[in-house]
Image (tube, rainbow, N blue to C red; front, side, top):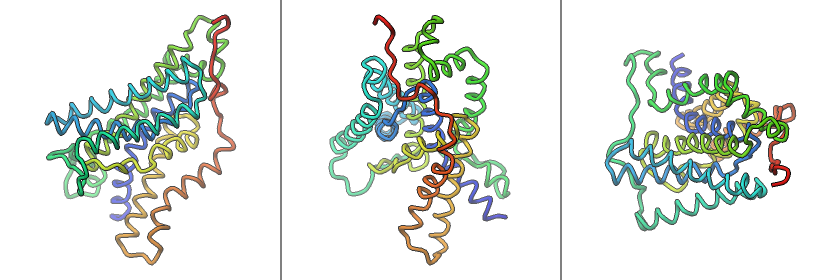
Length: 304
């Protein structure tokens, strides 16, 4: 029982940045935009958040910088895919390459060829709840983990009960009909991109300001791509997206535990295990996913 509690506690921490990113991607895709720039957005946000926190001496300044970075990078994605109507695959991959390149360039500019990753003197710590108990082990999480969990019911309510949620769904399904009804399709898509970018920025910030308290160029390590898969697994619903993130987090925590126990399984196979499970789950659920009808389809107003 104690081992399971430890695994679930670790799964929550591992799932946090993926959950932030996946919820952000879910909002964007609900509006009909596939943002493949998520990996680069998370990486550059992790970097800017780290640098801002280190130079200012405030973790909150770093958190704000990461969110702003995510918003600005997503705004660029909007310019390319919404305003100019360019191919979303190409635009998103370009954003990922741009974010990764900028992070690497400015990292070398700021820290040169540092042999060890630069670290913060202080990072966001875990809340200590009921120390010495199994329940306390499960509940002693980062504050940002609780923020991510709280966002799940909040976004579920927004999508199901608010005017914005209804418009977001409609824009992702039939933008032409929504436009005729007087809804500004471009504005809704931009709002979704900016909100999604803020959440992706939070995902990156969690890695550099909380979980690691440091920055390395491989800090995101494919989590952005996993988040996209989890959105499909979750069928664009917040609660199911949470379950997908927790599944990935649990398998990742399990493989780390197996490594620590010295299980006679090739190291490379254990490292690949969470990603293999993600691919398997995606293959099993992807066929029945209810993709937004206007996903990947650029919108052009008649006469524009």
